[in-house]
Length: 241
Image (cartoon, rainbow, N blue to C red; front, side):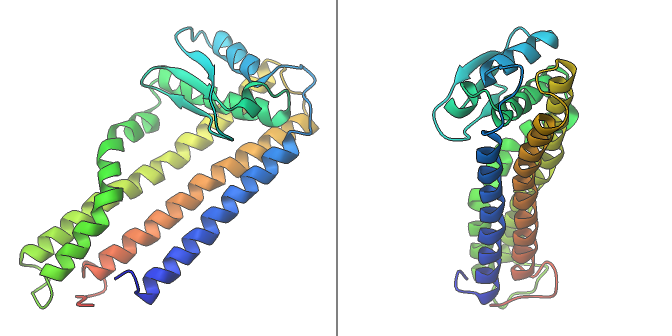
């Protein structure tokens, strides 16, 4: 299965697409670090200023190890910023910090797509890790059987359904991330943390590049879902290879 030419092509495509998107984010972030914001705020100060302006007092801001490891944890309501963002006074730092606050705002306002994403996380993790193996076992057990009967078929359907939940997670993540970026840019503008022109454009460039990584992940997941459904015989006819 793993030596299937179609599978290898999809893996290569995924590697190029995801790698290219990740490289673009790093490139844009490094470029944006050269643009100092006129307000002089660090990323941590940007985050705290936006949280305060939105009346969110139960979210704490922390420094977190790892380059671009920034994230908002809704379970303990912590905003975790990488050293480059936490201490940075650049357009990149301001944009990333504000983006993560965008997730905190979504959480406080019960933003529906974010709620959906959080709800399907457990089954999505199972689907991503175990779904393909269940499909492979189903194909092996179902070899030579009718597509609509047998244990192999039902295992294949289960595996595809589980992987579909992982794909759904990547799809719903896209609007969640772009909405957080839109909220970030509005807050940065409303609080005059970044100036229109070069500063604002740099923030937009960095956040757009970051958003495209999630688009790439969704595209890759959709293609793999179609592949597994095809190999399981659920689309395109019965497969015995």
